[in-house]
Image 1 (cartoon, one colour):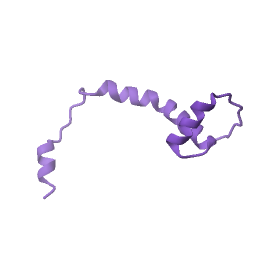
Image 2 (cartoon, rainbow, N blue to C red):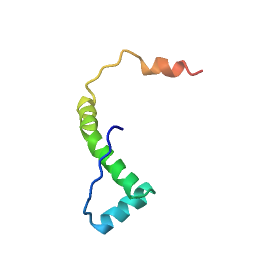
Image 3 (cartoon, helix red, strand yellow):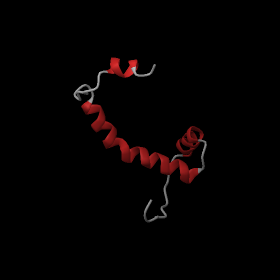
Length: 68
């Protein structure tokens, strides 16, 4: 994770409560998870831009036949 920084954050109480209910975690873990999602946003957007543009050399039908 690297260096740790202690910060003071002023948040609307209802926003924090909703976020904590969604994560079922405490304040620190909830904020950490939210920051990780914000940090991953560029990667998600890059993947979405590639949608439909990547050609795979593997035939999905042949892959499915391999299951049996």
